Image 1: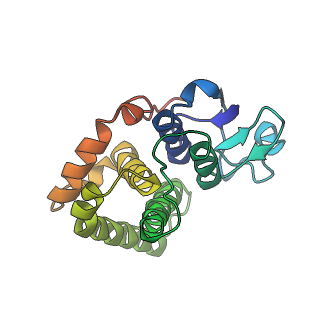
Image 2 (image 1 turned 135 degrees about the horizontal axis):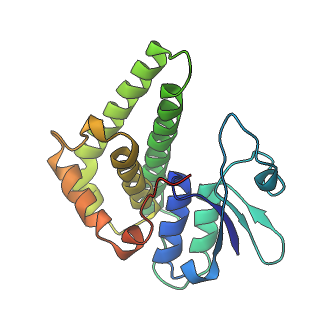
Amino acid sequence: MVLHWSSRSPFVRKVMVVAHETGQAGRIRTERVVVSARTANPEVMRDNPLGKIPTLRLPDGTVLYDSAVICEYLDSLHDGPRLYPPAGPARWTALRRHALGNGLLDNLVLWRGAREWPHRLADLEAALAAKTQAALDALEAEAEALAATPFSIGHVAIGVALAYLDFRFGELGWRAGRPALAAWHAEFAARPSVRATAFVDVT
């Protein structure tokens, strides 16, 4: 399998954490690419018309995107505990947490891009800041339950989102006033899959 990849992408990191958790990292060859909202990458667009990463090309030529689809595909290929639980309450909880982590990442990626625009939009940045704080407060309220439930795709998405905050928004100090979430994330960060997929800011 070939993965269009960047060491700076949180959505790529989600896929790589899942690949390690499911024992399949060795089956994936990463191809480093550069993508942005302002520049089309023809190489990526040959596989994914949206020009986004992660994009996974399978040995038979089938192409999968985006991160949620790739993660679920990888989870279908192993015999261990599923990151996507089967039908029932545990599945809906995992999917809701996955949506919360992904939504937080969407906010952060947009916010980071907005900071680089020539004409910054104060109202947009204020709204993204408010949504980020609300998501973090919701996660603090849920942190004990998060720690008490089996590791799932929801844990991956939330953990990567918090790591992306450290990577790109360290000045926010998200741990302040959120001791339960900080404690949970310290355990997440110690997992081998997470340690093996650290963000690296290279061009």
